[in-house]
Image 1 (cartoon, one colour):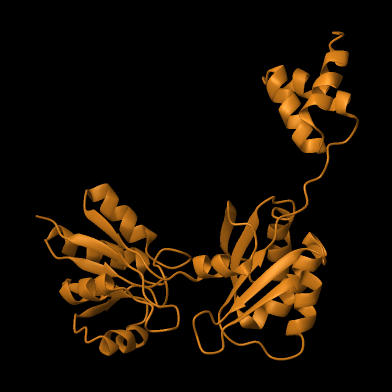
Image 2 (cartoon, rainbow, N blue to C red; image 1 turned 45 degrees about the horizontal axis):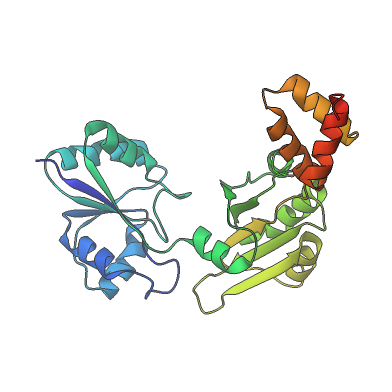
Length: 277
């Protein structure tokens, strides 16, 4: 019998943000894989967890994943935790999970805290769909190139950033995506000095220029304004008819949505285009 890999979420700040199930699993498994043994030991000692630890981080992930896979194949059950939040979300872990999936080893999620989800839930920006891009490139040139791909995104864009790069990041966002674009900056979530700033990119840059920023950050960039198509309604109707496989009903619906017009008005113009009464 092979073991089970449990992917366990841990608090992102407040130690109370851990589930009963997570504590029980951490007590029952044979071994816990952690990013930083010194950091995780504080949490585990707080809850009386005495399970053995093994380091698993970005610098040893490939080698360690193979070693942990052997233990799972030998029948041991393991838990994977990160320094904070949910493993594999902009944190090490996906290689181990991938190896387990390929080897037929059971992988079980033990859900809980996530800085990404926590920030989205309180920011007041659209969350019916969003795009998470992890950490932006550290250097300005790479960051600006990456932001060029995001500037016209019609859904909320979420990313992590370090406090020492916040000002430079906000300046690049203002230059590429617009100083008037809506943004929320979540700092030190669930901790004593938790803060959420919401406003424009320019306002955020001014606010955080006042003093040194500390703590982990989640930035949420609001959706771009949808651009109306170039040309007239009839030109867009004709273009979609010529370049797509959409039927006339679908074309009318899309053009009405893109131009912000009623369906009946666009339908009337489509009849004129087609030479029908």
